[in-house]
Image (cartoon, rainbow, N blue to C red; front, top):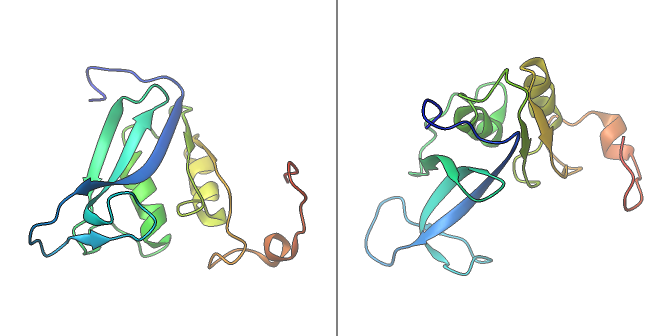
Length: 137
């Protein structure tokens, strides 16, 4: 897709479910989704909804996650054609981490998302920080 289409600067990364009630080894159950059973997809999209990249979760770790964890590896995998080009990717708290932010910054790519205070690898300053709604560091 990156050879034939140049997306806008702002990208979004999230997971979705494709409804599937049949038998599959990698069928997922997510209780807070509309379709509770199905095939889990990780999608990188442009702000107007155009899907740029998709990765199917098969129940196994197929990303190189030794330093950054599975969620960070998913972000880097889906963003691989868009790193070092000044893009900004918006994520939810499932993906955002301090380590990922540092790696993306080194690759001239911005990341914006909420951060779980209990995320593994967070510095103590982040864990102990008491920000009010609308504040940031």
